[in-house]
Image 1 (spheres, rainbow, N blue to C red):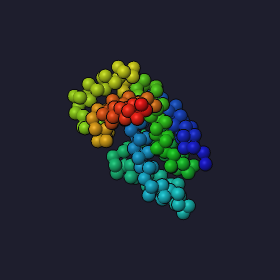
Image 2: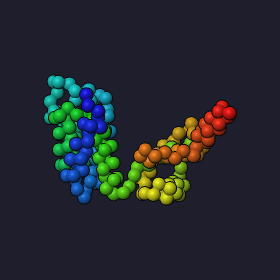
Image 3: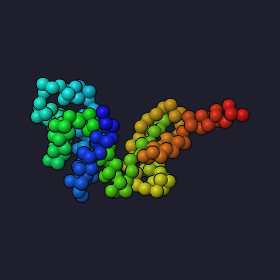
Image 4: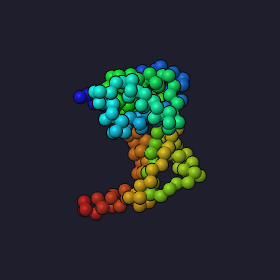
Length: 180
């Protein structure tokens, strides 16, 4: 079977080009659908040959509506097409690629900040400002707590990683001591 990234690319590009200037507004809807599509029970239901594509669409759209996610007609068309083509499992990757296209067009990058401790709003604002200066672009930051870091932060922006955690420093010291 083809890689999910290869399968997802045409869907993400088609949605991005049809969305035009409102692509950024579609991002939360696509991410919400991707979260639903990641549910193994839903995918098992969708893969059942006795269940029609219309039934799967109605179920997914209904669950999305229950969760407060109103689907734009273009997002509904994407969902219907993905289901009819048996590609519901690719929807999380479609969302990821669509997000990358939106970010690329707006000059914003997603950043994941792993921190040993919770970061309050003022600290986060300062950290994001310093990171934007360091990476040279606007960042959409989300924080994940990772106690194994002991202290400090680890930041991932695309394929770039900045690790200033205590764990990373201890690992560097360990490598230096064992190399000698």
